[in-house]
Length: 418
Image (cartoon, rainbow, N blue to C red; front, side, top):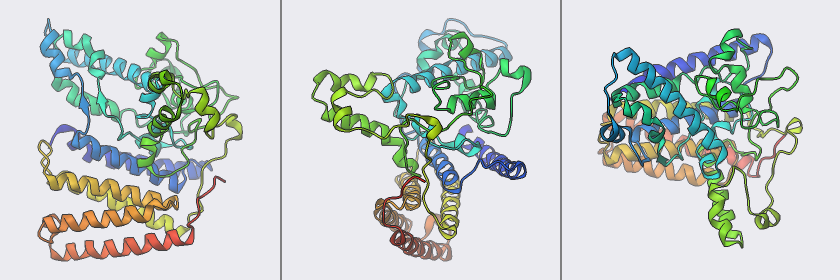
C-alpha cells in the first residue's frame, strides 16, 4: 500500500471529525453553513476523486522523475533544506497551475467541481476533480529538479500539501492577525471562492499567500462585501460526476455549433467562459449577472430521502476503503477496476436521485448489473466476504433499486431553484 493510500486512512477520518466539529460550532453560533444535499454532493465528490487518483487514471506528459534524471546538476543537502525547497517549489507550482485552471477555458473543466458548491464549508474542500486527464505540472518544478531533489520527497510532500488546504474552507474563522500576511487563511480563501466582481480570480495561493502578493492577484476580504459562493454559470445539480464534465461538454457543443472555423479551435484556449458570438446568440446560457440576487439550487428532498442518501454515501465510503485494502495498488486487477467503476456509478445513481434526474433509474440498473458481474467473477462471494455478506449485498441491490424508483416516481419533474 503506497504512502498516498496509507495517508487516506488517517486524513479522511480527521476530515470527518473536523466537519462534525464545524457543524456543531455553526449550530451553537446560529450560522447555517451546511445543507444536506450539498454536503452529500461534496463528500461523494471526494470519494470519486480518491478512487480515480488511486487508479492513476491520467496521462503524465512530463514526470518529475524524468526531469530529475535529465537536468539534475547538483544534489542538495542536508535533507531538511531539500524538503524546505521542495515545499516552496510545490507551492509555487500549485499557485500557477491553480491560476491556469481559472484563466483557460479547457483547464477550468478540471477545477469547476471545486467551486460548484453555493455554500462554503469544510465539506466543499473535498470537491475535487475526476476529469483532470493530462498532468504537466512537473515543468514548473524545474528548479527542484536542477537541484537534484529526489522524487521520493514529492511523493510524500504532495498529499501532505493537498491535505493542508482543507482547513481554510470555513466561514467560522475570521481574520488571523499576522498570519494573514504569510499563509492562506479562511478569509483569503473565502475571497477566492466568491463570485462577487471584487473577488473574481483572486487569491490562487494554496499554502503561502505571498505568491498572490508577488504576482498581483491578492485581494483581502472586505468587511462590507460578503462573498457569494458558486460559479457564474450555476451547475444546478448535486451530481458530482456530471459537474466534472459539464463545462467541457459545453465547450464541445459550442465548438460544434459555431460557424466560425477559427472559433472551433480557439475556444478551448480562450479565457474561461469565452464563447463564440454566434453561439452566444443562438444558445444563451443561464448566468449570474448580479451575485447579490443569486438564487441557490435546491431540491425538495424529504427527510427519508436525505437519510437514505446519507446511507448511500456511507456505503460508498466503506466500499472505497474496502477496495483499497484488497487491491494491489501498483497493479490493479480487472476486478479492482470494475469495483472502482461500480463505486463511481453508485455515486452517480444516488446523487442523480437527489436531483430527481431521469438518469437515476438507468444508473441504478447499471450499478446492479456491474454488482452481479462482480459477484459472478468472485464465484458468488463478494471479495471473500462470505456467503451471508454476499446475500446481504444482493438484498441491498434490491432495496436500493426499489427506493430509487419510489423516490423518483414521487418527483419525476425537473427540480427548480428556490
